[in-house]
Length: 101
Image (tube, rainbow, N blue to C red; front, side, top):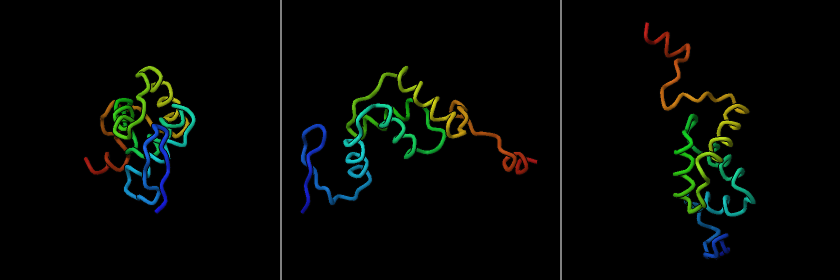
């Protein structure tokens, strides 16, 4: 069985494929908070809030970045990936508008 030490010094089973273990291993190998926030955004539902990102990182056992720092990274990621900040509201797409007619 393959085992590895996490950034926090805990020993984990490297063959563990549960989603949490996979994310924890990936995050442990990242060198800065920006990369961890971007990783979270890549694995959370599109349109997740800053607080969703911070909560997800906490669930993964990561240091939680400040709200202001996380906001700047999240806003930059949204702009680069064409994701609008809807403040938790559903985006009115052409398909949704057609369905409402």
